[in-house]
Amino acid sequence: GQSLEQPSEVTAVEGAIVQINCTYQTSGFYGLSWYQQHDGGAPTFLSYNGLDGLEETGRFSSFLSRSDSYGYLLLQELQMKDSASYFCAVRAFTGGFKTIFGAGTRLFVKA
Amino acid sequence: GAGVSQSPSNKVTEKGKDVELRCDPISGHTALYWYRQSLGQGLEFLIYFQGNSAPDKSGLPSDRFSAERTGGSVSTLTIQRTQQEDSAVYLCASSDWGAGTDTQYFGPGTRLTVL
Image (cartoon, rainbow over all chains, first blue to last red):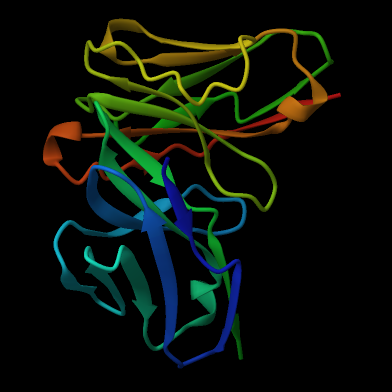
């Protein structure tokens, strides 16, 4: 089967750096994505890692280690507007491509 | 189109009634997904259409749920004999599958309330 684990909640202060981890178990792993969802809104794509290493997009970075079945999302210079839920999602090929979302991590940014 | 659209935005129905939810994907996107999200929960995969291939229905929770995609574009999710546990936000997403990363673009969702 396939499973993803990420913390349910993380709290950080404005201006700080926070890391949201995601571990996965899946066959046919293809890549790891991250999505952000504000309360009442739809998920929006943040980043994708198909290869090991760090991908940087402005204040957000995402890391993948395929050998450790592990990835993380790094948010720097936290702002209040970053308070949201963050989902990791595994793309896998098991007879066909499939994307499975984690349960999400709720990030609270405090002043 | 500019983005994924869904209708209606809100639907209140009585237990036992049938409902139809509509999704208009981004033009040219070959992949279309339906998810369900209960309050404060993650995304529950329901069904996935890719081009002309047979849909992946592995996430449909019961045979009361069905979906179709006409002409490779618009999709309709139908829930028959609705139950209170069907209350949730139903999200549709589309992607340009050929791009490799399967970046999914989500619609605003349909909030379904079953009384």
